[in-house]
Image (cartoon, rainbow, N blue to C red; front, side):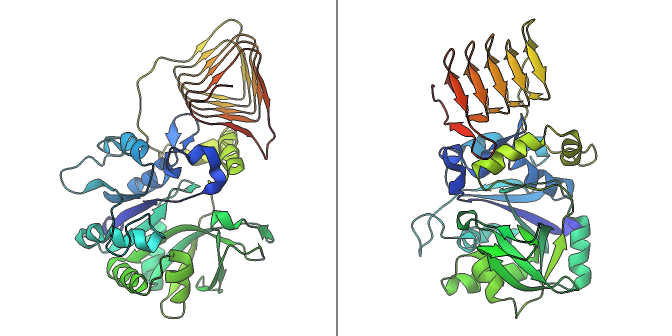
Length: 375
């Protein structure tokens, strides 16, 4: 059943609350958990659902994504027929600039959609981190006779939103049908939080995209879904597992810290439904006699001479003797000199921290040092 679907991952999100972390990379290229990228999760979810025709719609800063994907071999998508396609941005006659919304991005990918031989389309994004198999959702979609089935998870009532995060909530009937949609409400009692992942029949998505685009409606949730809610049957399907949202620096920090919890780590990386990524050959991490490490994720190639506690270190990080790293995320190839102190800090790639430097943030407002910086 699931073989009759193709996948589209929208990787053109603009999340300004991620600040320096997305100045030079797409949201999907954000490093997660020591060796992964954010886009590894939606891509692996599709592959684990036996989907072998996947298009990734890129917007800006997509070079790192293309380098990460390569031929698609780590996801078994390096194929003569179908496989992984990077749909790089190009100008439409009506718009010579950046996409004005997901509808316009999908319009630019219409050739890929029309060529797909599968009957159904699974549309997802790169702003959420979770492990999910679409088999049961597809079965529910077909049995319910829905035109669109949307994936959601439940949050606590009274959720405060930030309009820069583009948060979407569903008001659901008892049978799971979407009655109304709220986008960026200041304060809502709705609990069904959209993961912006949808199953829709190919001919329906083509019709809806063409119609919305012809009306100058470029937003998927605000325009395409909300304006058609009385015309088409939109059902909702609940994901009950762990979900991490990449909508701010603090949530990015929180996702990486969550992975220090073995229960969450086991849920995100089960043996049955693996998360695949591009692997790089590297030597094992080296712990010198002066090293002290507790409750941390340490990637290969690291050299630890100091103290590391409750932190995530990516590949080839060097922690100098006497340095103290607590509650921090250190991205690849960073160098922290002797006797430096870091707490609630995010160091981007290739950052250098001088001897005896001290950086202290907080759990909700971690200090961020941009890529290639020196402090």
